[in-house]
Length: 283
Image 1 (tube, rainbow, N blue to C red):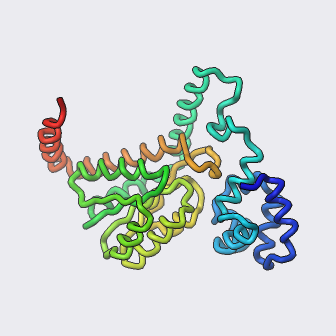
Image 2 (cartoon, rainbow, N blue to C red):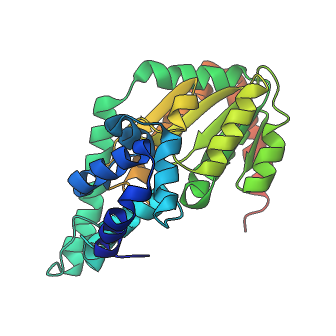
Image 3 (cartoon, rainbow, N blue to C red):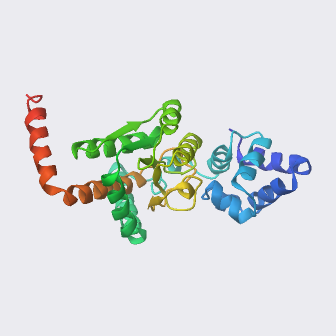
């Protein structure tokens, strides 16, 4: 990736060759480079007065793979290698302070998420999944482990649920969506192209979409029938989120608990059967 100087120089050298709408994007980035690092593609588009597609097109004309590539290139020149790992940690911290800061970051994220959480949306998502004839969970990369955890919990509740973390198979599954089926799309940035395309295809088939992203308007959350969010202060340029995972896990546990409590007798019967049969696999 290019460093910030290279990116800025490229913007200025190619400026005259850009379309009028693309110049709006570049103008905003040049004026607010540090702010751009924390914006989703949809938020930058809104601030620049253009479409999401225009932002991506401008980035590619500048030689970037896309908007995420641009953000990482800008950000990496502004943060140390230590900050890239965890923004709360400094080079002078000892291992005890590092551990304390990791825990403090997760606690802060949980509190921030709780403060902005729409409880009705969480209940609606749980009800929708419970009543769905079929639920499919999709995620890629760092979000895949979250998808697997949700899958495991819903499976224990006896729901018709599957999980997919392969982009090609996701699109195949999405093309087979039917009315009443639910897609749970998990993406911290909300800008994963493959997940977005699968969600679009799913909705075209008449299915419902529940999204789980970090707070802020994103291309994925705009497709949601129900949008669930975490509120992490981690910068969105990071390729993997840390503390936001704690909040996502709390959301998953909340959905699981609400569904379980809505059908307690059947759930308890299933739990007993599962424990009986799974128990024989332990020494």
